[in-house]
Length: 161
Image 1 (spheres, rainbow, N blue to C red):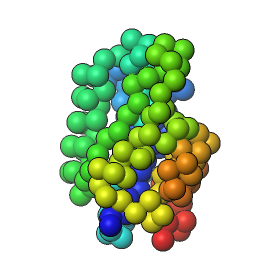
Image 2: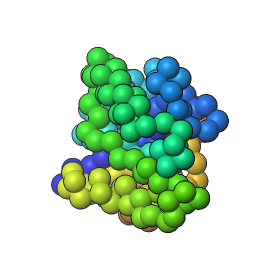
Image 3: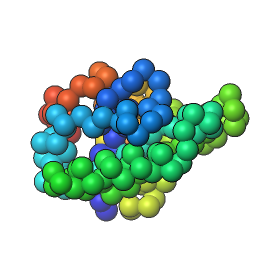
C-alpha cells in the first residue's frame, strides 16, 4: 500500500486571502514549501490536495477557473520536481447546496483519495491550517497536522515519519 500527505490548499500551499481565491490572478503559490514537498516525496509519500471550494456553489468563480489554478500549481510544482498525484475538492456549501459527505470536516475527499490511490490511511497525513482539516483527517483514519496560515511545511516535517 502507498502512503500520502494530503495538503489543504488555501493557506497551506498557496497564499491565504481571507476567504476564497476567486481569480486566477490572485492565486499565489507559496515557494517556501518546495524543499519540504521534495523531501516528502523522497520519503515515499504521494502528494495530494484536498480543499473545500464552496465559492463554486456561491457562484464566485467557475470550475474552469479552479482547474486553471490547479493546472498552474501542478506545472509549477513539476518544475521543482514535485508531482501532485491528485486534486480533491468539495464544490458544495451548506448554505447553497445543503449537506454533503465531502466538505471538511467530513472525510469524503480523503476517503476517495485513500481508495483511488490504495493508501494506507494509518501511514498517511493531512496538513491543514484549520481544525476542520484535522477533524477530517481523524475521521478518515489519517494523522492530521495543523499549521498556521501560510506557515512553511518544512517546520512540521519532524512530525511525519
